[in-house]
Amino acid sequence: MAKIHELSENLTNQIAAGEVIERPASVVKELVENAIDAQATRIRVEVKKSGLLEVAVQDNGTGIAPDQIDLAFMRHATSKIANEHDLFNIATLGFRGEALASIAAVAHVEILTSTDGQLGTRAGFAGGAKTFQEDAGSAKGTKITVRDLFYNTPARLKYLKSPRTELMKIVDIVNRIALGHPEISLTLTSEGKVLLRTSGNGNLQQDVANIYGRKVAEQMVKIESEDPDFTVYGLVSKPELSRSSRNFISILLNGRYIKNYALASALLDGYGTKLSGKKYPIAVVAIEADPLLVDVNVHPTKEEVRLSKEKELSRLLTSAVTDALLAGEEDPLFRLTP
Ligand code: ADP
Ligand code: MG
Image (cartoon, rainbow, N blue to C red; front, side, top):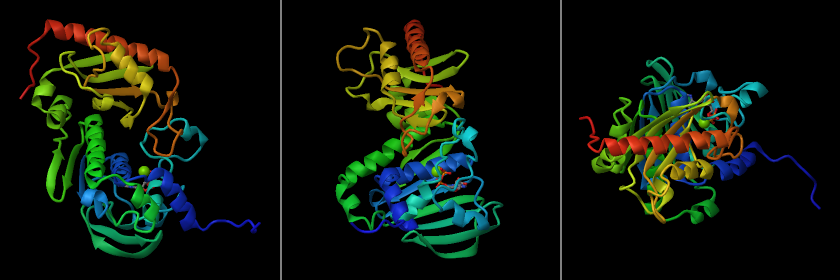
């Protein structure tokens, strides 16, 4: 057998990228989540060729100081947690310090960033290594451009679905993040064509109208409920409006889009017998929980979480939906405010 040796940093980053960066939509998700963590109020996502040629995400957040660029692209380097206590009390979307290092290991990356809106930094990464860094004028915030994704990992390229499907996955994740953050203005363009633009004025109903159409938005009822551990807020469709898949259910926990079968089922339970057979509602549910009750450190993509008191939250969600539907019946003329 060959001797044991330590893998190079670039190789370990490529291995990590295999978990975190599955497809162009993963790049979009990680970059947009970084922008949100940087307190951006305006985020623009531009993709070309379904994100394989280019993904560019620009935000007006805090920016990164020149001497922090190397660290930002180093694996397991993060500004978001510092100690074990923080790991169980995560208030940000990121914390693993993996995304930028992973993306730079499987694509060409350029960053333009400024912390003060005057002097900034431009830097490039290829093959996991920095190729240049220079001073550059820039608006406050960060723009990261990712080109030629998976150029050095042909197996990954092969595993991707059709360009159309990959673009749909990008649209899907941006839509869900937008629904979870009506306070942020999000724009998505593909080949220069605007696919989504939200105002960022905090009106969830307006965003639902934007994404699913005005007719849908007008047939949603508001849910709002809380107990000492959780608050639940959102919009769910009246039973008359349904879809034949669960794909129109978005659950956001502390601003993070998550996949959680138990909570989706709890939502369905709220409809009782009002939804027949294989019918599912359209729903956006934002849950706020004490971070101590949420373990996000389950999977590198952070879409799955472990929840303490999941049963209690499920009950709260079910009754919030039941109550809202009852109230909605009494108020059939629910209209979208212009
Ligand atoms: P994580 O988000 O888990 O910390 P990342 O690799 O995604 O790891 O990012 C590394 C670090 O780079 C972040 O902790 C943050 O300090 C900085 N960073 C990344 N993106 C941005 C951004 N858009 N604006 C400001 N800082 C950023
Ligand atoms: Mg991140």
